[in-house]
Length: 450
Image (cartoon, rainbow, N blue to C red):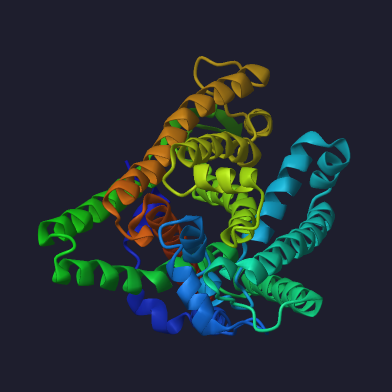
């Protein structure tokens, strides 16, 4: 049964949207920031030959570079200032969050509240710069040797100056994206980093659809196959929406209380535990950890001058290869449990319930409640992790075997649907708050007339 808040949110009318001035400003700011992101993705790195780069990139279709290109919104294919996207920032965030769970000094910072959070954010920024420098230098070296066997070169004037300018440009582009994402989060609607990733994926959807329809027109694939892909995409979206709203509600009972001479009845409520508490974070984290070293390795191996073991590793870890799929599945499942443990703390929740007199029927308050919540959370997280692995890997097997464009993969659909649902939920929250403000103003006016 829907709660009172959900019922009120369902009855919200978007006719009040024109009156919500603050919400409109946030939406316009978000749209403007995403437009800036798309414009910057077309600014090339200095010293790059775009014609030769396009020819060389054509030969990597279906590989890990193509998958990374999807997350960057085509910026890698154009080798723009933001070719690395937000992947270094995400990887640095993973490292910092892992350290907050393993290193005592980082644990202490996490408990310091807003001050500690700012310090951890600074560490994440420093880590982003370091990872971008390492990855950018690897890409610069790989670009210089890429295509040498075919007599092509994507670099006009190879050398140390090109490498330094490439690293500086990529660091500046990644830091700009990081800043832009933070601005969207604070001044716009939704999570800025997630919206940037989603915008990159959505920007590639038209070209992916055009490629598929062109293949159907030329007879490379059948029309029935195109219909099957669209039906599978719609079914995947419906399944994602169903699982993202799935909850395990734990009954919470509050005892009777005496207020003055009156005895208030005991109240009951529910503690909702989402099946997928981690949301879209596990696939993004797993993709980032796999793509960051693989991108550098593949650029280094493209020229044929890399060591044999590097070429063997990049071949074994091609997108769709069994080893890649296995590591991707392990990463998704591991981060599902890891991020759920960060988001939801059973001990803290049990302590808060005990403080306010709430208890789970049949379970003692305190430690026993924390153990019960941990027991339930671990088991529903198994279902959530299995759902994420299924959504992300099953379409990938179809992609690798049937040559469907990457943009219709489970990971991309999961990110787009999740971010869209979260953004719409935030818009509804702003409209709900605006509706409450209108009611309060009306009640004050009526009170002033008496």
